Length: 113
Image (cartoon, rainbow, N blue to C red; front, side, top):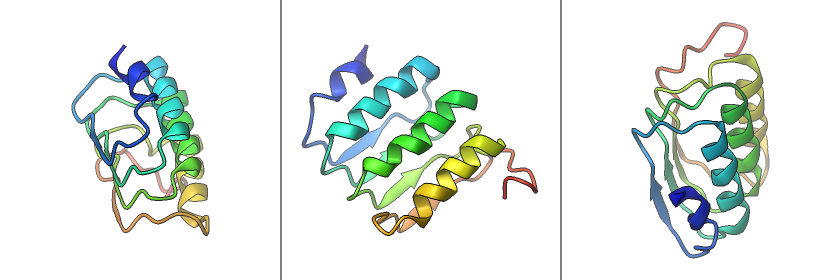
């Protein structure tokens, strides 16, 4: 519900959703927020139980963020292969401006790393 309303907020600079239980539906709403927000510099979704399709969707949604410099994805499920590939793709884009990335405690497998 809250994440759904955030997509209307286009001037948000810092977003801290850390420590929430973000199901796949919440990640889809966050995706919409990231598509519309043009100023977001910090996103913290650490320890938010983001796994599987939600993690992949969120990583794919990051493609739209051109101003994001700090990204905290710690203690989630980005260590699975599909989310790791999507995140790697985003980080390798020429438009990615992330300078601080925390992906600690994501059960990163050797294949995903």
